Image (spheres, rainbow, N blue to C red):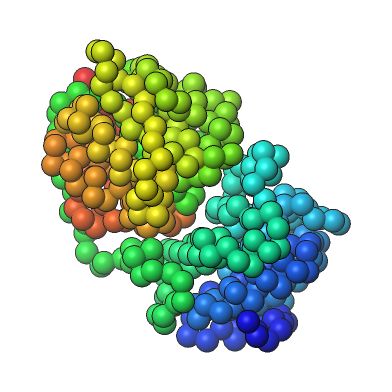
Amino acid sequence: MNIPSIKGGPGAGQQARSGQYRVMVVDDSAVIRGLMSRWLAEDPAIQIVGTAGNGKTAVASMARYDPEIIILDIEMPVMDGLTALPEFFKINPKVKVLMASTLTKRNAEISMRALSMGASDYVSKPESNREIASSMSFQEEIISKVINIVAASRLRNGGTVFRGKTTLVNAALAPIEKTGKTLEKRPFSRGRASILAIGSSTGGPQALLNVLKDLGSVDIPVVITQHMPATFTAILAKHLTNTTDFECKEAEEGDILENGKVYLAPGNYHMTVVAKSGKNIIALNQNSPENFCRPSVEPMFRSLIEVYGSRVFAVMLTGMGHDGLDASRALVGAGGNLIAQDEETSIVWGMPGAVSAAGLCCGIYPLKEIGARIKEKLRGMA
């Protein structure tokens, strides 16, 4: 494809037409910078305001380029991504950062640290330049995340979202906009909950950490579907175990659910719960993705309705898209309770916004209140 060279410079941030989202690409490979910049710039919603080959150059050019979001590589000379990250926030506390690295265990661990330091999300970069150039799934993922993260940030800060067409992003992935009216809430049912189920995506790892820390402990099993690739889910489970009072594990086929333990859906597998020989156990499958996701919240919630009926307490945290919406309708219809994270504290108010707008929630709370609210409601239902 024939794309003109991308240049950043004074005023670049103000030249975005019709509210385009301003992006800076930081990667030590000139080839990768060029590839990513060219096909990102093909989307009408995105303007590449600048590029940099290392963290030091990126930090030095922040004020000049004025990006709304930075796509940041991890391993770079002079200054790596993890070192540059806090420097970006010193210059502009509102800038969003999307980590991009090849899917190795080491890079996954570093990405997890970056998320805990304030990065909004991550994308797994294909290993070769050829794969980066040809992988439509990678291109769609990164464009979708750029658009959704920046759009959500603008809405939270009183700005407006891009109104033109985009080449790759389905309108259904766009964040839920404020409706200007009070969202309807359902009354909590009074039956005792026998399982806590959480769905999350973009921004989810840090949200999960906060919720579980504030929750402290529960006397029922906890199951979580977080949209993540396989290498990341094992590291997230370990991270949650090390930083909360819970024992969290990446779920395995045949795990018997135990009270007080957390089971995280493994990457690339849907996680469900089935009743067998008087026990409730984990069952994994690689059925087709749902809402473009595997793992998906949908099959997890559906399976819990079959096993627990009205005794499910569900939570929808920050995330892009609307995964879990259909099963949430069924869950609430079966008598279960559902709460959601509010717009102000969500990185992207897609998943929680969808269930909130549908009138399925008993409560919509800021992140810092969710753990305490769960504890309070579970005790009240005992």
